[in-house]
Image 1: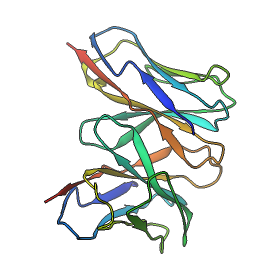
Image 2 (image 1 turned 45 degrees about the vertical axis):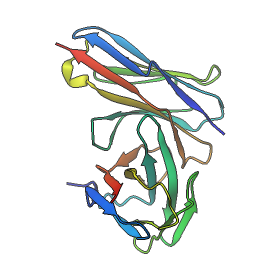
Image 3 (image 1 turned 90 degrees about the vertical axis):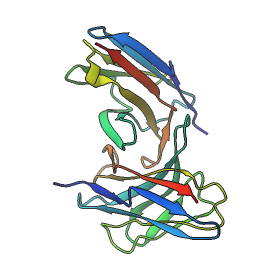
Image 4 (image 1 turned 60 degrees about the vertical axis):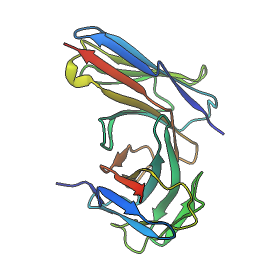
Length: 112
Length: 114
């Protein structure tokens, strides 16, 4: 069964820093990989989706990369802001294209 | 606005009681999903449905049941057989066509035991 690990579990940075969140997965036969943001007590907001054939996706200050062969993805956040404080979840889509396997998330705090 | 609506936001269950969580979407999405989230754990898949009148068990289906009679609706029943139901329940849907569409989530229902 696919296992998804996110490191670090928690991260605190001062405003303005560039930061990298890591996601690793055990089975490289994936369909896609999706990064989500979750605010406390709320549902998930989709940030970026990378197809298995792609290497990276960008949206504003966010950039996600995918290296299937090594089982890794990174989410890069440029010029962090206090509003970026949230839990970031990585989810790997299996080859059926339907099920997502989630990591436990990285809790990010950006301090003013 | 198009989106996914989950209700109620908070729900309390007594011992031996079945409770039903509502999930409605107006996104015209074919696929719908139910996940459970516990503190410090990732989301775990309970059930999913790719099309009306069809659904599949996920990793932790025991003690839960679903129906998919309408495209817009995918209710989840937490039965008395689920001995540890306290959790945050999230419903999601995915767009039509190729499966390389992102999943979209509702705001969740928090279920507690009385």
